[in-house]
Length: 403
Image (cartoon, rainbow, N blue to C red; front, side, top):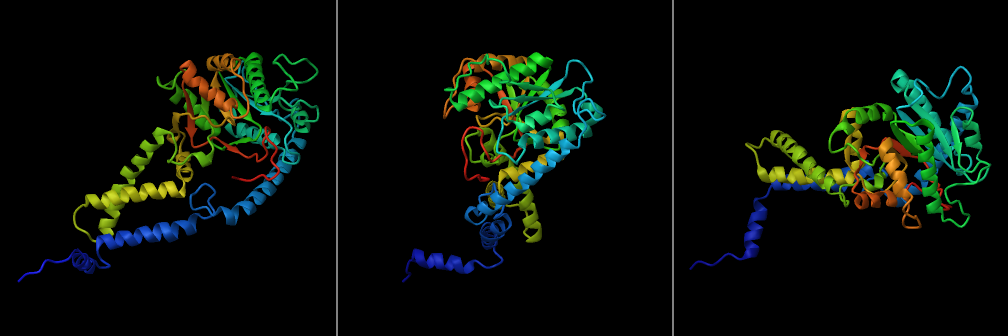
């Protein structure tokens, strides 16, 4: 008389068939070792990784960052103290033509003393312009001082080397200056003033608006040259309202509301999945090709890239200017924004029609105008500037932190 085999007995029999050499066991062990041991050990100090141990490292790393920033601020101060002024033998401004191709406008206020953020930014631009040489002769540095008080020491120092527009210097403000104006609306009005001053003073082809705590990356000028001469001439990029050169690293993960990143994430799995499958099959001496194994490695690679941090894999694109991607922009933030001259004039008109307040800063205002006015805007990846400031010009921050 035959007896039916119970489900528990069947499960036990299948488990006994599994061995250390079976594919399922090997892939399970690989997953546990990778995500439970190797990746946490390798990435626990990576600031923008899911494996980052915030409670262990954040306070110490923030303090180390502030100390390093102080040293770099002092180095930037000495850089300008030892540099001949613009009428000396080493001019900081190139004037190859009366009408510059690109104006780099740095918007500055008097921030936390000692860090000399604007000096760090301008000194880095100066050094990169010197390295760029004749290719950057059509570039013009321009400082826009929007500090209400007259105590902005760094702006006064830079006036020896860089043309400066002072919004509040001895004249009545034409942009609705009112002591009761909230800080977000004032920031927008300052932005409008600096953008308009750049256009009126130089009439350039492009204006790069840079905040005074956004330091340029080494590759900024070769990448901009490639983007503006080649990529932005493409039909779908032409006539964009602006091109962002920075997006916060903490918002660069795949699990975000930008649909384009989901397509990129799937593409990572489709690229690495077959490659890792081939490597596994070869070293495990497995015959043929397995679709389930390829599906596993596709998901494995997608999970690994997301958890380690998309930001770190984007750095591979710095190998060549042609590898930088241009994707639709999201609303945050405005440390570095590139405007073609016609688009800059449209932006001035648009911003004059909106009022900023807490929860609706100039970055959100610019982004909201895209849909309202039928405009397009894009962001470059990876970032072309680093945001070095931990002290906001809008809010008091008594405990600055990297996150």
